[in-house]
Length: 46
Image (cartoon, rainbow, N blue to C red; front, top):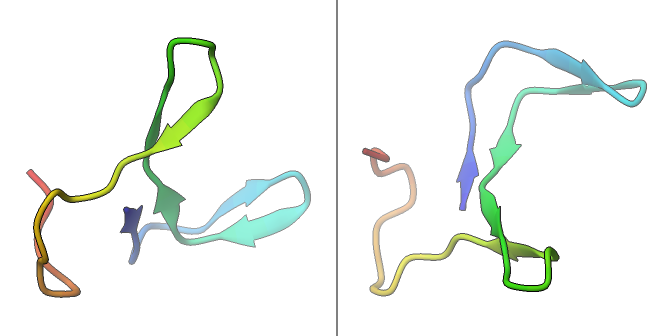
């Protein structure tokens, strides 16, 4: 899941206008958030 159309932020020398959404798994490694069902691109996140 990726959030776009954000204000630009400098991260490690790169300009980013997006946020990839994830949570830490049981062992601490990142787990990307994904929808359980097919959803249209550009839908709202709430």
